[in-house]
Image (cartoon, rainbow, N blue to C red; front, top):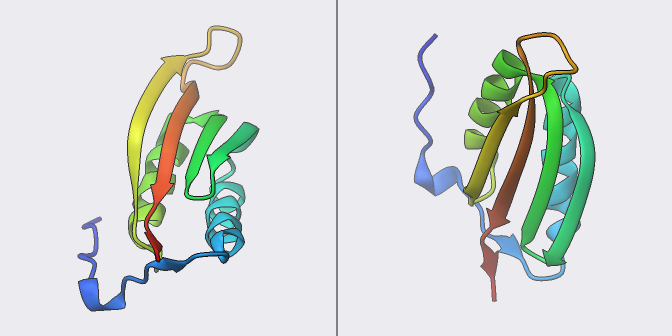
Length: 103
């Protein structure tokens, strides 16, 4: 399946003070892709450090879904480790997701 190209005119900056809208979209996509969110840390309003667990292929679908979000964002850090306590295609993921905030 081809990845849809994002039309930059459709991408929105997150307005300062509206970061919860971005977080809600991110959280819904995590849930829709059957990924477990172990923890979420929010050091700054626009930076989310997430620890996720789930099926590797579901994780890749989640990344593709994030690419199609209506908000400007990027993954700035990503660590994927196989979890030996779970089935072979399950992974433990640490990532930092950064949203671009308009001033």
